[in-house]
Length: 183
Image (tube, rainbow, N blue to C red; front, side, top):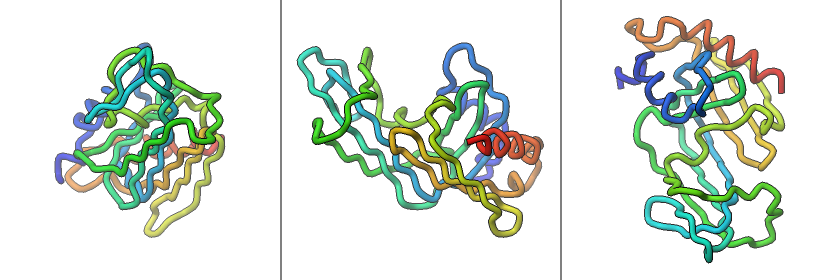
């Protein structure tokens, strides 16, 4: 668990999901209390570990959920919100084939997309709403809702752990709160 409170580790994990040309501006350790990610993927097939392109495949609506508290890293770039699990986590995956969903935001799959990589990077323009409230002992609660109905219930601790592994936590937390507060 001590390795979670390490800025170098955080930068490496978030870096896997940062789009080309973007740079991490701020990142912190946080707690996710609830996660619900929805994605709509076209012309693909489902495998054991993810989705693969399939010209004859269907449109798949994927819901990736977790209703328990777990450690995450959350970061921002100029245009994106990036989220990575601190440790390997398990999620509930629900699949549907086009059942009544508005298919406006269908993403075409061009290469294998692992389930673990879904819901890790969101353009700021995808954020519909962000509620920020004071929490217990200096923490901040943050409820982020995306335009596609994905959402996160997050908590940003006041401190970045013990041992000094995250020396920029306070400044980065303020930057993230300020950026999310615009929504």
